[in-house]
Length: 87
Image (cartoon, rainbow, N blue to C red; front, side, top):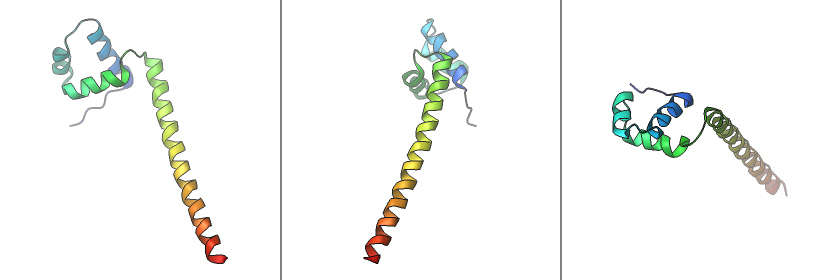
């Protein structure tokens, strides 16, 4: 079963590590892999909860913008193809 942690929970876990708790103990306590712990640490290390929420908002906005660019590029290509066939 895959357990999802919120940004708040992840930052709380990382703060425990910063306070001196060993990574091995944290991994065992929260039943996560070391790989997950260190991925969280690289992504959220040193952040506050508000910064993590802002990061998530920016990632979502970036995803939407990339989708829009892909759609517009496809529309542009279709229009160019239609115009080239009409000429």
